[in-house]
View 1 (tube, rainbow, N blue to C red):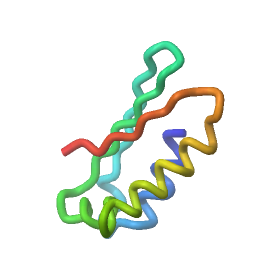
View 2 (view 1 turned 45 degrees about the vertical axis):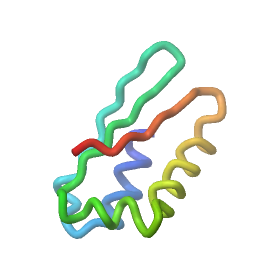
View 3 (view 1 turned 30 degrees about the horizontal axis):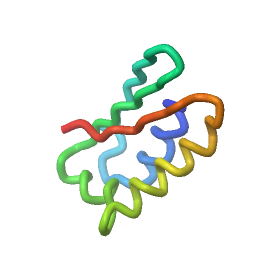
View 4 (view 1 turned 180 degrees about the horizontal axis):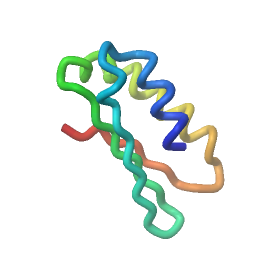
Length: 74
């Protein structure tokens, strides 16, 4: 999952070297914490949150047996 999110987000931002995804597992729950450059934050979120919603939809579809949460960290 971590590699999938990194790949998608790096294609969207201007500074792909600063994209970091940290995975935290708590039982059956997986939390992915996404960090990007502050200037790229708007590109990842998108208009009215559409881009991040689409990324989350892909992540949720890829892991039907595990509950996944994708957070953007400042």
